Image (tube, rainbow, N blue to C red; front, side):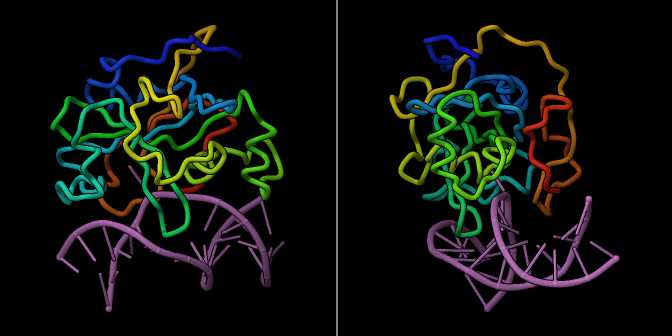
Amino acid sequence: MRWLKTPLKRDFYARPTVDVARGLLGKILVRGETAARIVETEAYLGEGDLAAHSAAGLTDRTRVIFGPPGHAYVYLSYGVHHCLDVVAETDGRPGCVLIRAAEPVAGIGVMQTRRPKARRLLDLASGPGKLAAALGLTLAHNGLDVTRSPELTIHEARPRSEFAIAVGPRVGISKSVELPLRFSIADNEHVSRSR
DNA sequence: GGTAGGATGGGCT
DNA sequence: GCCCATCCTACCC
């Protein structure tokens, strides 16, 4: 699989968070020689969403979410794993998309060395913590501009594929569970399994 | 096949 | 001091 040389532009991200979450499915995350096709996302909204980190308001940690769209929000989950989000909405309005799972498409050997415990290709990036580890992302990457950073960009796939989108409740949260904000490529094998 | 529980640290009340 | 946007292992069908 290949992808366009030019990354997705700012206006792709400067839209309602749900549109960005759906739009990111099938796109290619590129980090150095490693690349992966996004197959599962979750939207975290700026209003009426108690599960979103930004629900607590603007703090040092959530500053990036309130900033301009098209930037990476990376945080430490459960003190152990890193997770990658991409900021949506216009500057000043919170909203971000958690990238939950991806299908490795390049640099698979490198990803395997970063995730020595993964036994199968299907285990490499089929969860937010696994994905961040496979791509080698840490807190140092928080705030990166994914429309132009040499470290991390997101691209249109070539050829662009057709697929149905499955919608359901988000994973691993206790608040605002009723909101249908999890999106995935229907029947894709690389989606996360956890509930 | 399935799941319960531990690891582990930063953010927020 | 409590709460997590998780992953992995051990152990049990």
